[in-house]
Image 1 (cartoon, rainbow, N blue to C red):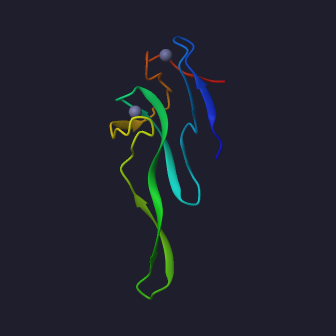
Image 2: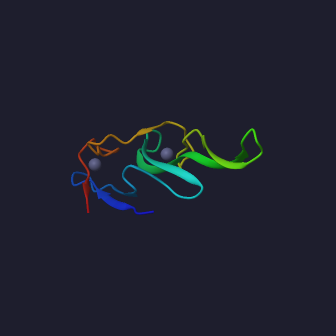
Length: 96
Ligand SMILES: [Zn+2]
Ligand SMILES: [Zn+2]
């Protein structure tokens, strides 16, 4: 999974995140803003769980989970807007 370093030119805050949505073999991630600790984070929004069809065939399904901040474990997250606002000072963050 590719991450991008974003930096706020106004206050110097940096975040290394995927900057959108991405998935691997087990989880779907989305870049979110944590309003509790004021950081930009990649949070797990869905997990792949093994199941089976009504005919007994194995099938994996995406199961939505409540996004939690990996830093402070808060659920007070919202999707990071495309304007890339800094969670500390509301300035616009740039890709490094
Ligand atoms: Zn800032
Ligand atoms: Zn947090």
